[in-house]
Image (cartoon, rainbow, N blue to C red):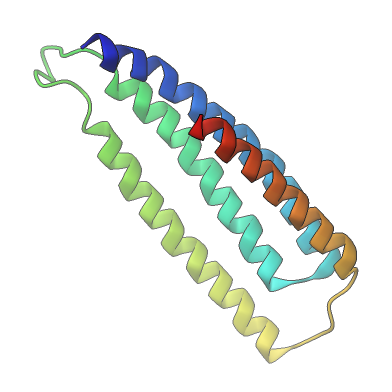
Length: 139
């Protein structure tokens, strides 16, 4: 029980780190997309948005799941985490549909990409941010 309580306090901290990194990567990837017009970079930016939304939802659900049993929830609140999984799945589906629509539109009206060097550099920088977060959470 003590270990579970310690984990309940530590897990939201990692979710906040993930949320902060998602904000940075969304900004980098969205800027790369705006500069280049690349649907691939748009897809990457939308994926980062999903990561942010799910990290924020995870923070809320972890805090809720850590609450002790009460009269209305005699077995605790830990099933709140399942709600988070369902929302994440819906967000992934909606993001996939948005990317498909953008890709079909681009297919129907193709044009050359602009400023690829800057776009790729911003995308690589966002990868470095994610690598740093992965290293921090793995420790």
